Length: 268
Image (cartoon, rainbow, N blue to C red; front, side):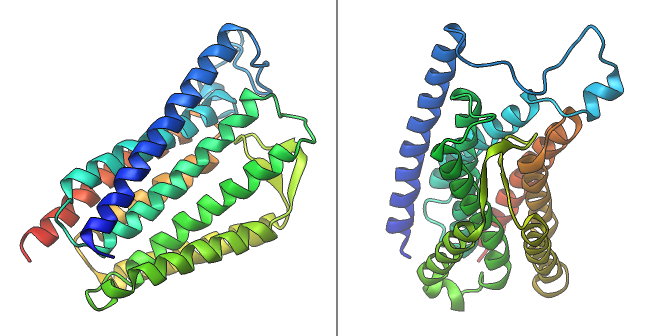
């Protein structure tokens, strides 16, 4: 993938993601002002809540904060990458861009509170489940591929690797059965083969971490681990503690990762 092609993709993503963010903000503002957004299944009762309960109990507002953060994070990170790495040919940045696409797909979970799909049999729930899981597989495969195929030799195969990632993600997400009448506390549709899905994710993370720590051994390995942990925590976060832990890890990891990548290629 040439620099011109990559920069065009990043610019297009910045425009599309900004339009979607504005759309979701406008919809939330309109529905909220008209009282169309129903009461959340897990609401905070400040009159009876304790500090421990606030930190560790499930409340619907915190997954919404996590989702919104991932949406803004993907937009601003892609904007930063577009202009900070405009002339830097880096396979890591291309895989990071794929990860940002996966993060952005999480934004579709906001359709559940927007259209009151908590106990619905709507086909829209299936769509939300499929696109959400496709995004998650894209992210985790990008984590893995970035550690395995980030050498200069593999740079010419980057388009093929990305195509493999998207195809595998679509196949995996298509095989996951989605329940249309149950929404989990993390504001994700319930799904079948839960243990298998978790096993796949843990396997991908294990291989990624082992590769980073014992094979790649690059300066950005630790910051990359922070990014993967922060993202993983955020997509499952249901309470205040894990929401802000995920935000801190993802923000700190991304800042250090992009800085280290920039320094790594600056002196080459």
